[in-house]
Amino acid sequence: MGTLFTTVRDTLRYKGREGQWLWVLHRISGLGILFYLILHVYDMSLAYFNVPVHEQMIALFKTPLFSVLELALAVLLIFHAVNGVRVALLDLRPELWAKQQLATRLALIITVVIAAPTIIIMIIYTINAHLGPVATTIAR
Amino acid sequence: MTTAGSTAVKDAGMYKRSTRPAPPPRNNFERAAWMYMRYSGLVLVFLALSHWGLQHIFNSVQDLTLQSTVNRWGVTGQVANFQIWFWRAYYGLLLGLAMLHGLNGLRQVAYDYMHFRPLYWGFMGLSTLLIIAVSVAGIAALLLGVNIAAAGGAVVR
Image 1 (tube, rainbow over the protein chains, first blue to last red):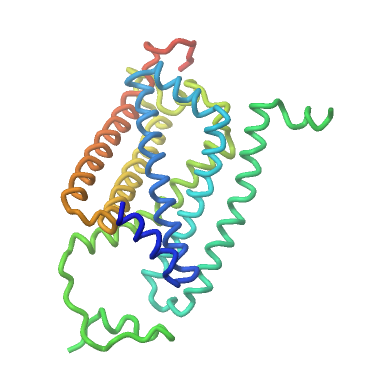
Image 2 (image 1 turned 180 degrees about the vertical axis):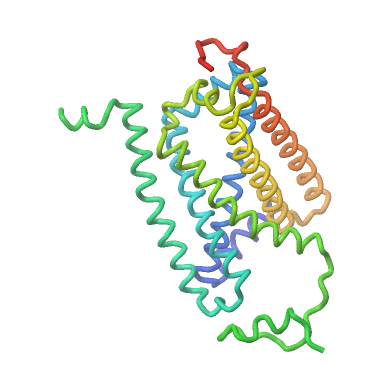
């Protein structure tokens, strides 16, 4: 508990600017993705080992709560992928190190550019499923 | 005597480094893990994002049925055709690379914050067991196909 407090406090105090915050987000998004990955592979393995439970879990993933979590997962995954490319490219090519700050900003911009349409499409799917087709709703 | 470690950053502009020779690497496991995170990450960008796009953009989770899984995995006892082997390779590679990438990421984070070593080793031991068990189950299910004998609804091969 003390470690957690120190970690949070020092993360807030440390003036590492964009690079530090991308590092923090990379860790958080990685842990979130790993948690879902384990859940997802477990769920899919039940398509052989226990089909009724597998179908119950798929039904659970279609509920509104999980639709919202799915949006969060999309943002985490896209950010982790884009920022991961930044980390890998800069680590493997030291001659690019003078452009660290440009790279951090590009990573954020590319994340938003990919995530925004992704989220819009997913929200439309979700609304269609839970509240009826968007087209019908607008027509009324 | 010069070493590669200290000269690699010489031309990095504003980032001046000490000319003191870099110490020889202490631990080849850490070097391999570092390299693995970068290279597997670059492959996973394509595998994971294409998987995400197929399941969440071009298709919707809302339309997911047992039939969609049967279409790619085949059913238990079926002889796998080229299409089924393609999906086995794609999902198997994605699963293996991602689980190992995630396990090593978890190890790095746990090592940084779990200063009480028995806690770190216990946590990582249990996490490693869980990840291996789930991965083996996932790959087994991928190879065995959907068990339609246990399914309630009608499924077509």
